[in-house]
Amino acid sequence: MKRNILIFILILLYFTGCKTTEPIPGEDEQDIKADLLEAVRDNIVEVARRLLESGADVNMLDEDNDWTLLMMATNRNHVEIVELLIAFIIDPEQIDRIIQYLINKGRAPPIISGSYTC
Image (cartoon, rainbow, N blue to C red; front, side, top):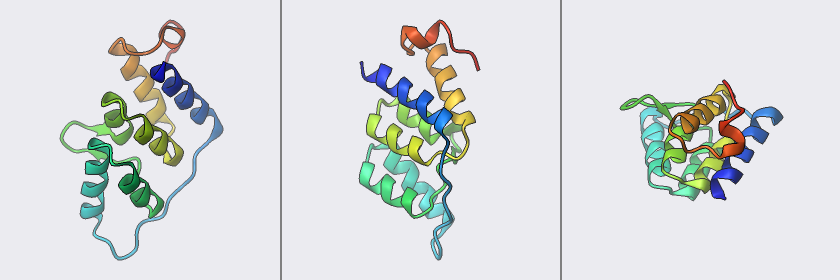
């Protein structure tokens, strides 16, 4: 059931647009990136929210595996983090990538698996 809701939210937000963020003034970009990556990986919602609201890059890739934050959170079933990230996404192609990833892994709900193409 959570997966159906997650997919619905992904699709809904894809078609409704996104908001932009500004860089965090005076902060070291590498530290911010590492903090956001850790918050997403460890499902620390409030830290991730604070960083994103301060302008951290929601579209960054994990350099170890080239995954977006959204892909990482979805793979780990961190539903609250996924919802938070979607609210800040600037690059709507990420949503296509994550839906295709779920389909390829056989984890997308049947209503999406049979009809969605990227």
